[in-house]
Image (cartoon, rainbow, N blue to C red):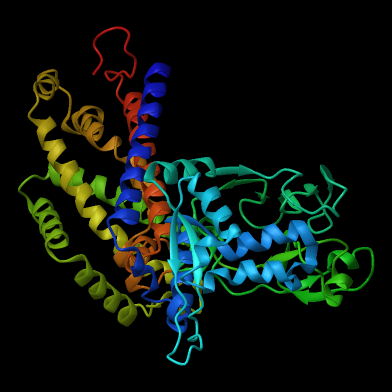
Length: 527
């Protein structure tokens, strides 16, 4: 079994890389890149050459390319020579303004130096000539630019993604010469009363800590970097988007770090366990609140995160589906062609024939009118009640599916030779169904149990949209509509990983359930 698992994991990793590569090729090379500006208000405010430079800056941020601006190259060159007074030096101004002369700029020594350096690195060059009125005055946003541009190959883009997929914070993460006291150690946590792992020189102050929020132990030490959302969530890490609570702010009486040991408290929603390093200059107010540069924070919010909302609804729906679907399927098989079987088949036909959107709206109308359940998630006064309608709507088709397949497999088993032999031995129909038929019929369904559970993490697109559930169900479709490449790639990695894991767990569970199935290559008789 170990050999099987090792081979399966290696093949799974290879499959995941292939899928991510194909998605990156599709997203970054087969779709026009300028679609990312369709909802970009800043792009609309730019004009002429400034708009072109803004486009290249966005292309670099989105991962299409890397580029170097000649102006920044000149700045770096003269900062080394003159220090912070570079901007007033005549030779700096002359070199900087060289690109404003489209006829003679290539003869400038610094321009030649710039071209030679980046040409050796495989860059190509883009020159945007100054745009002027007939009077000779430069148009708004029309000054000249010279760029060195390097398009990213899909393989290198995939390599960069893998390289930064998992990061671990160290004491060298903060690039600040003034920070000399760097450490990672265990200290008493004033906010939980327990012990915590804290750092100095790390990006976050609290690396490992406890609090009263499930799962009660949290960490900022190891990061899984699925990517960054640039369109939908404007620069937020995707792992933060799906993991942070989505409810209202929770204010409590707390002390700022500089107030610890005093009797001074303030009512605030700040999560002091989220403190991260601020490389800038602290304001006077910040200096009275924080004893160090760890001043950047997030707020405490109630409720569940996007992925938790989807998982809770999906998991409860899955449990209901198996608790109802399997017994009803068994009942239909035992009462084949009788009233119970006909009613069950009528439900299966109905739930499979009617479009999902139609029956979701129908059950939503029944739930709100008959039982006064909240329709929209945000409007629920009692948040627990908001989960009822989406959970039931999600469970209904799964119940029908399990009924159908359990009935089919049960009927197939009823005609098997071993059933006839059991009857000949005098076993009762109840014993035959409970000991033999139902267990053998379950073999075909056991493999799908891990997929049903892990699939809850991906959410339900239609159900969550109808009931306005703040889950992950619509994350991918929203990203595609807004051309948010970071979320598209992240969802691909997430969904593919869950599918692969579900297949492996399904094989293991099936081998445990059915002794005739072996995952070992040794011996015979296994499937």
